[in-house]
Length: 116
Length: 112
Image 1: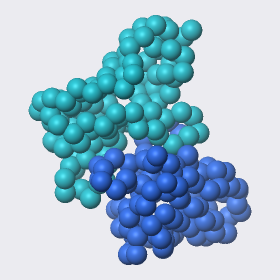
Image 2: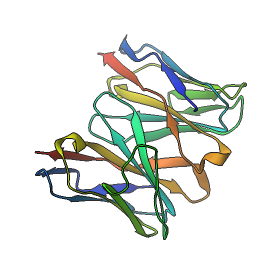
Image 3: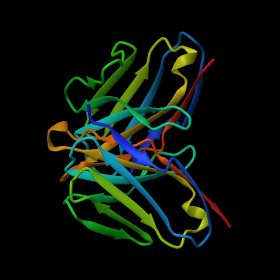
Image 4: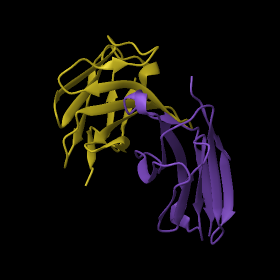
């Protein structure tokens, strides 16, 4: 149980384009999902909290117009990186909270984004 | 804000040795979690701790929630090559909406 998937696992895009990353909870419903960014050899940096049916809550310093988050269903949250730049290249990971276990997060396998 | 200090940053050990790593916080947590991350993958939850003083095992892994609620440790006994990876501690408090604060990670290397 508590399986989270992400798609795509890797994506290469050109500067100025937008790219969408999907995060799905496969065997449970997740009212809350989280999006993280991770640089090489560093810890996870929380970008935003995604709540089903409402606007995402962004962490300080994260541009909400650049990183669009949509949590339209109980099993799917999407992160869209708009007008991507090379500095947006990173490893993006989502996680989901399991119902009944509000303090545990289960992570997806991550998406490697490269902007050329 | 809350900060987590995780140590050591890296460890190089021989297969079969025991390993210990720990995290300390500037403020109290009500939950401590330990994750392992393999290269190019997302973190996998190893152990969750909910009560001060709690000692929990998962196979060769044992973790404890410190009595002061400001620290936690993870022990790995009889390490094997597949234990290689980065281990993260994470903590949260009741009023944080489930948001986790992560330690900097401990990179474990195991020499066969």
